[in-house]
Image (cartoon, rainbow, N blue to C red):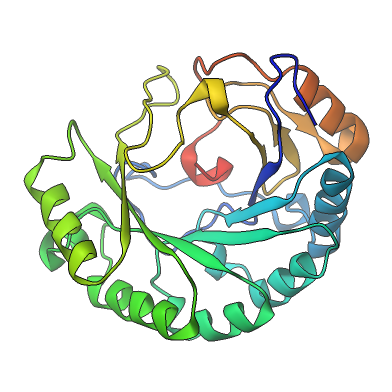
Length: 266
């Protein structure tokens, strides 16, 4: 499907939960969040219906996000359901990898092809501080499990404050080179003020070539991360939500004062 700026939209990012097992400083407020009610979160069948309709409109690439998608009960089953949708050619996930040691093999067997893993430092103490309590050894174990499961490529998402030449970013880069991982540097973003830039090593943030829509855990199709626009599949119906999201996709991002990274999926 083409939007009014002639961009071909074939990529749907699906947030399956707003819950996470980490509390990273740049993602979640220190005093916690107000979580969605369980009845407000889309069921697996609803998610599959949204993706199937998206395939009819040209979606062939899906990325599962959260919060942290591996905390969603039954996530392996969902991966299998999505992979069995005729027309899906690319199925991936963004995860913090804390639980990936347990899930990598069954996810791969269910149809998951590749993963992006969040890792902003390789220093255990600094990781614990950034994530407010996370154990970096679990991330390393998750990465190794992903390798053994054949998830490929494994991309590392490293958030930087100003530059990929920062000390921590360079150390992450060295770790990735040593372990044959692809690193992507994501500059610190601010939804409410509209601060974003193109991802180093990726294509995120390049508005002129944006090919994605986002589905939030509570059923909003968002045409742009940096926009307050959203169209609910339960309220409008799936087809109408798609039509409005595509028809109103902005030329470029501006700001978003109605959502956060943890409940949109980044």
